[in-house]
Image (cartoon, rainbow over all chains, first blue to last red; front, side):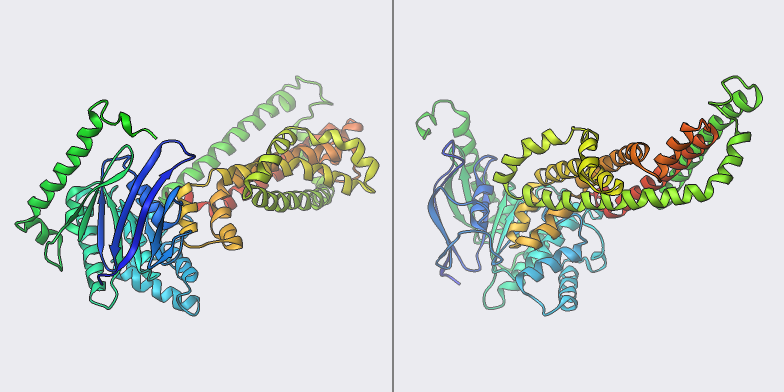
Length: 273
Length: 257
């Protein structure tokens, strides 16, 4: 831990030289760090995640994983999207087995089926492997997607508002589950590095070692705030911690500044490309 | 959900049979009972039912003959249409070049090629095969391309994150994802194929279901013509029902999304 692992250097991104989506992004993420990224819609936080995933390439600048430039998607980076992470024509187990097959885990089909069951059990879905994603609730689908991401044992987890479409209570449970799984992993030698995009301030504080606040027009990093709440955390434990509201208010203030800036006319006139 | 499904299917079957029975009854009333229309053109059930019994061997050989043409022609168009669709649809540049051509070919009636098919191909079977094949190919191909174009971008992202390439990408993602649209294309193609089959058989064949109808019409044996029509309808309905069952089975996931 403590060494630069994921880096983003002077990255700009735009579609076809039109409007600048991301401007001069610089980030260094240590191995095993849980980074939450927050910002108003249109700030390019999902685009930044796509760049890290290798699903899109930067217009200018470079991104690296332990020194190697990112040139495309790879199984070293598992991605969990808000929804549609699973193929709807395969059962949950088949979805995980396919991912394991691609990641070269398990010697044969039977072994991969066993591994997939183990990870489904880990997220509390031992009984639901044979179901299609469409037969599950949104929360269960996301748990399956998380099980798949963990099963392929990627050192990096990229999560794009994975709990964004869930109701309050389900979301709270998923946060606790994710904390549990991730903190469990930290006890081993190399914990997973997580890049977690959200639009929920409390979620960012509950989960993140650090929260990156992004602004719009163009998308850029505004603040980078370490969240030194004690680990291991639970959702309730963090909510009740005396510093929780300090962090939450700080983030809300930053977000308000970003939005105010956007609402006041003329201020961004000079930002055009 | 299973019980309700079966219930509504049973209701559909019963109401369908009920309407058919009403139509048959009305036909009996105007022909057998009141003898209103021309008795040669519209024979009553009294004549049709015995004619059916007498025709059974011919109907069965006709069915075998028709199927020996329809099945290979449709199978060939599905196989080549879907494969060509996969090949073209995954190559945007190739698709940009070919799509206008495919779009233009799709609505053309393949029956216009009959004179050439007969002149060039050695047998009735092979010339009809070409006509049916070309009629079914274009809707299958068009819809396969459409299905690929309509794939959810997330599925493609997902496939890329899993490093799915080549045949894995085709068989695990593109083909199943495009399957609803492919089935729509096959459905349209099948409907065309029945039309083309009967046309081909009425024009140039010595056997088959279309031939049976045309043959007895030439002798003004309209009881046999009606027997042929009923038999043909029955065959088409059975094929489409089996097709629907297959579709439901393969596309079961689309109901639960």
